[in-house]
Image (cartoon, rainbow, N blue to C red):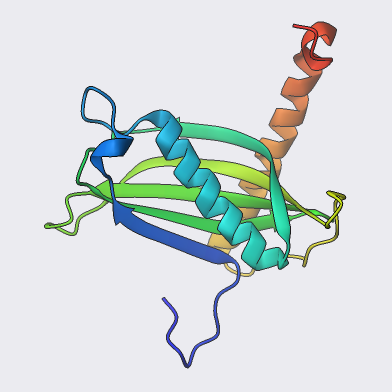
Length: 167
């Protein structure tokens, strides 16, 4: 957290809130779609702060739902820039949730999202370079680039009809 005397860490964004009844399914657990919306919003905020620009989602990769989020849980989403390209930003998101009375939050979900900064006409524009400094940042940067490589390989597996949107 930053205080008025500390500069904002532009590479990281955290959202915290309580899971409301409007976000849960019939089983009392947060809908996967609601969680994905929260993830996208948090990652967008991180990308926009980093780049200083409007950004669009390019891909969501390697999302994993580890445990459910229940109505009334405190939810914390942490988005961090972990790698950049010329116009793209790889954002790693972790989601923790738990009973707000205990203060103990457990990992529920994590994923990588790639955003591209765009100008007023929707054309990609350059973003500041992220240079990982800590060992953790270096591991996350390698992970992001490994996931990108894997996703690129998966695209190559798509039948032409799928890749061209005919199916």
